[in-house]
Image (spheres, rainbow, N blue to C red):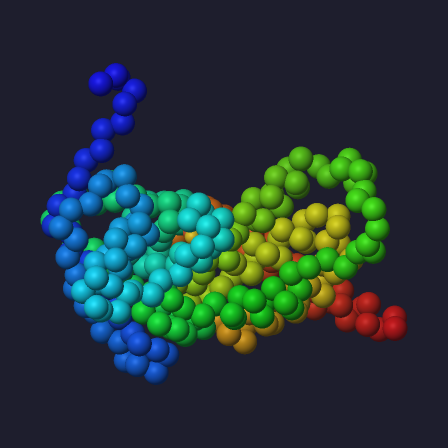
Length: 264
Ligand code: SF4
Ligand code: FES
């Protein structure tokens, strides 16, 4: 074997304590399952796939969990693992977590996001439509269609472009809400607001956007009290600084929007 060859180890005797709930009206319960042996190179979701194959072979119901891209892009793999949103590895989504983060004999507790705004659909899958309502309220720009403009037609200062791109990394997973003791969605909403409000293309609707998005957020989610759990849980390491950007714009919107309206 050459020095560069990867060595795969196997974990033995893993116990999974998984939340099972047949639907939104079921009270739900934990059920325990055993995985006899698994490669430490398996991703956490592959481990759940293997468990489901086992359950189906035994004539039992597979565990329902959300997933799509499996590469940290879509934000659907929303699992609370041992009480941590997306598990013990910082700055990554559940689909990027591998079994090498665990050891033989571990008991791993797997739950869905726990937040009033995210009702459980089944087992580990939740309904995050409340996020869609926030984006519908203002997560867009209105611009005339036509030919694609040259990339350098609108100069944007590098620090502004970088800050907008950092905010645009939000994948809408909901970990920030699940980790927040108040079930607040301020990190998500602020990421969406900041991404557009920082850029020249977002200026036309800057203040109507922030007002509409914040007020829609408040219909579904709790209030932010600066715990900072959201930033720690975020798989994209989005800084809570974006919340300050959103709050400043929201305050200004209360004057600017009224002033614009008075001119109509
Ligand atoms: S801010 Fe982070 S934790 Fe919250 S939805 Fe976006 S990516 Fe997920
Ligand atoms: S499955 Fe898409 S981010 Fe995890």
